[in-house]
Image (cartoon, rainbow, N blue to C red):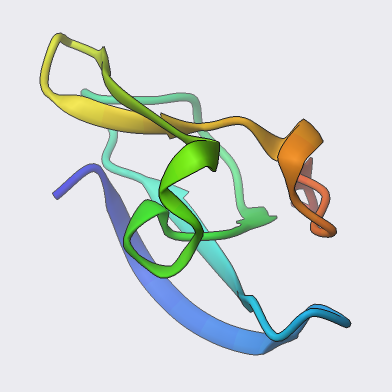
Length: 71
């Protein structure tokens, strides 16, 4: 709902799926990003309902995946 053009591009050393995606224009920054989906990660790394009081965020410090803008 928050992201679009989602493509799985790999897995981390611990087996977490890594994706490339864009945010929907009215809901997030422009560009292409690499990171995870909150549904695929351990619950202790999910920060519930941060964006617009409705979308989860991810605590990347608890994962072996980096969040990065790639385009």
